[in-house]
Length: 285
Image (cartoon, rainbow, N blue to C red; front, side, top):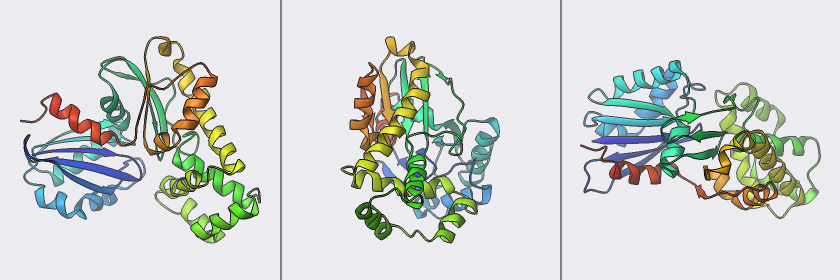
């Protein structure tokens, strides 16, 4: 059996192949980000999945693409975890940007991830090249779910929301100040907490404030990240991966057009494309 996983900070999509002929089993768990969660929490996420537990001894190989797996230490944490749980499997752990690349292209391209977090890289056909380090939700992550969550909360507490929008926001979320502060400053996953607010944006796109927040976030992401690769983009396509990118694609395409750029493709869930690539490349035995 072969197990493939694409993990962001919020959720992890797993695909279990019994063999080439049978339809794969799809599983979803909470995200496994080793830069945020403790090792015991990572272990619990997998252990609490009945299907992963059921087949853990039959799995021979694990391909894991994860947010936070961009350092030697974080990769070792995930590899060590898998060696304990999937005792009969070899494991290959790569950062989530490689999943985005594999899900979109085999050839050189600039690939962006915009989900709970955000990132942008150049793929030369073999390796990923970054021009901006991934510094996480406190410093960067423009246009991401957690970025938009912060912007929404700030507009609410600064009394910038129009009355009608504020009413909808209060009906959708618990906004007690002490509860919000606890989730932001005492939680192990504040980025996930912030990202949950982002769905509100796309439910109220007709509002002027919402439009301003989305456009400003997209513009910052393009100017700070994509334009780092403006020379490469003269010769290669530009791809986007992630749920926020997918739902904001109209805004992204307009902002790119204003800068003389265009997007070639949007992929909501890279795991779906990874399945086809892995079959195609005959990774299964």
